[in-house]
Length: 264
Image (cartoon, rainbow, N blue to C red):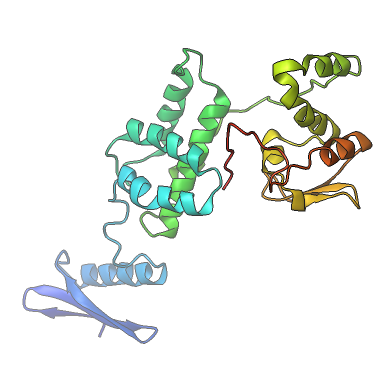
């Protein structure tokens, strides 16, 4: 029998997948109430929620410090961005638990951040707020994986629509003027600019470029660990000449003697 009465309290006892479950049902006053409670326990077992009575009771700030940031440092190249954005999230939500986080509260966070000013006194961009919302959603997803909570309220909050497509290009008559300006104290930037114009590479991709990723025989650059996906970029003659003249005996193609760039 699944439910039975012992003394003044109802109890349940059953097996699911050869695992025995038993316990008291102190809230049940009748057999019907006991059967309803027992049915709810079975459903929770099937859905993996049984025993998680404290689901969502952990504080957001504690999970970020103890779990998320160490995970980010291990698994993400952009962990430094996560750290300073996480501070903003912790300062705003304080000691809120996961259970207390709701779509209206996150919507208010989105609105308040958009209306706040940056340290420079300028209006905060919608893109910056979207980055913070993305991070908050990632925190919730990780918490779900770790069975700290079972919902992500960020999925109910729309991000700001961005119209940030760039239509500005360097015109043919502007390139000579740009190259002429890269002299004197700016001369060290000229190889970077030549490679950027000839390949379309991002600055971070150039600073991370190592000689073992430069294939002169096929005239391609092999880019890995990029913002989008690994790819090969063809080199035009000017880029080939510029790189061949930069043999510096070091691992990185572009090296600043005064500053060490670290991309882990």
